Length: 256
Length: 250
Image (tube, each protein chain N blue to C red):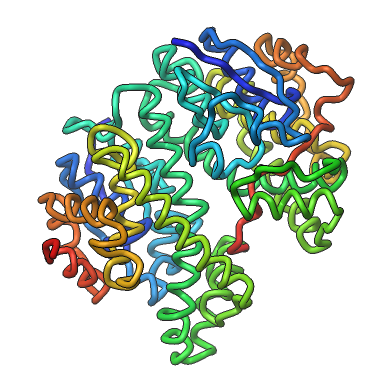
């Protein structure tokens, strides 16, 4: 497959950051099309013409459109030359996929529930309510409308928030233990699991310094610093436009 | 390579992985366990790993290869495919492979939790097994055994199952036999979760002739028929254990 690559993305963070970093690691030249997610850019007609479901990120390669960030990463690894981002060993390939699903479907929803509840939701509620509601009504997928309403209006119950806090704490413990077994998260070499995990966990030393630090999670911190030191990560995070990317600064610090 | 597949009755993820093993021809020893009795917890010799305890799939099959316990049926099938050369269960072309993997991601996140919820509500397991490390999986067992089913979640699960069938019907609209090219991962995984839905979400299958014909084709396919022949009960599609959780975001 030949043709230009365009990535439609938000900040180098979470789902948007996964294919961004995979492309840069792979050495693939691409057109970066930044979407302001909090401004609902991804639910406007121009983007819905690209991805009718209105989810981000999306990638076009030639005339083809790809969605689902983790599946896009596997495509990027397979479709382009460059350093392999999946191990050759079938068991290690399984482990990479297992950890990506664990992070995508079990851990990340709890991270985002806390993030939306504490930071993004309150800020969104400062805007014109009619404008916000109209933006939510434009969201094509009904389940996404449900999610955005929960996020914007802070509809999380205390039980849900407590469960999310439990999962984040447990997830940190599981990542720390796994990173004690090997240099990278799921295989002997750097892989898509590391790209996925970094996008999920890079903000932890700044947002959860009491739990993620050199003393309590030495392997997690070592791993985050190692990924941050890669030229691709620096290049990718330079594409950020908000203060989110600044949370990386704490990784500049060396162990005490 | 010493590979042992611990599987339940041929339904849901166990059916998908059994069919994948037979389709690829990868040699695995088969060991039946009663997933609905919780035998995955403590019933697999030497298996202690976060990937076993925290499998997003819930009570699914476990493939132990040279002491490594692997879970999650889509990725077990990918493993078998990788061992077999990488292009039996999934297309070789990267874009076509992306289509299959994106489909499976949607399926296991939206349809599988709904099917498992409806299945365990209708055919609840008898007791909560001891030794469940994952607290949220233990809670799903408690809910299933005690019959604490939420009416809203039941309705949501029927709607998600119907949406799943709608998508299958649309995928087959051009007259194709299988979901993506040759029969493979997407067919096995989708069939595994939908084959038991007729009595649980009957309305989802009404007026879906292409889906009905596809279900019959998959059922008759040799590797699936061989997997179904391993059943020890007359209706394996009625055997359920707690599966993936329903998306907490809705």
